[in-house]
Length: 131
Image 1 (spheres, one colour):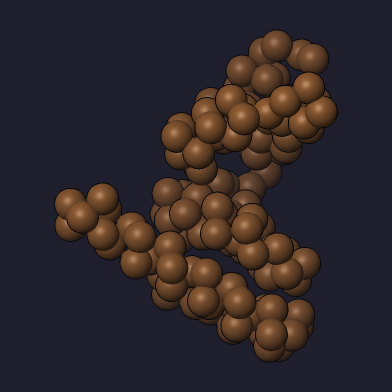
Image 2: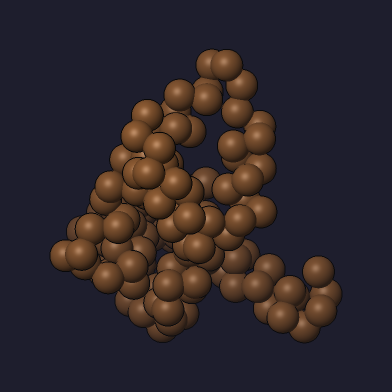
């Protein structure tokens, strides 16, 4: 593992997804899943997310569309929160999912809308001090 790339990836991953989530994912890794955590942190977050060609906001927007196409609800939830952290607005998220409905299928977009609403509600509770 390239330590510098891993370090950069870990920092980016924490900034986008939140340190609590990332630290928990790494702490919960076992002998079987640890190599996956290292791969994701080093290459996905270190090598790709830190490339200069696209902003984090654009990368988040692309992820939401692709994850909707792949119908990956767990990852959509994580990346809706990351998209908000990267400056993507609720309105932009709505438009991404509407676009995905046409090209990826309405059922996938319906799931993405439902998941995004859950995240928005969780974030609103956090901001209002409700935990």
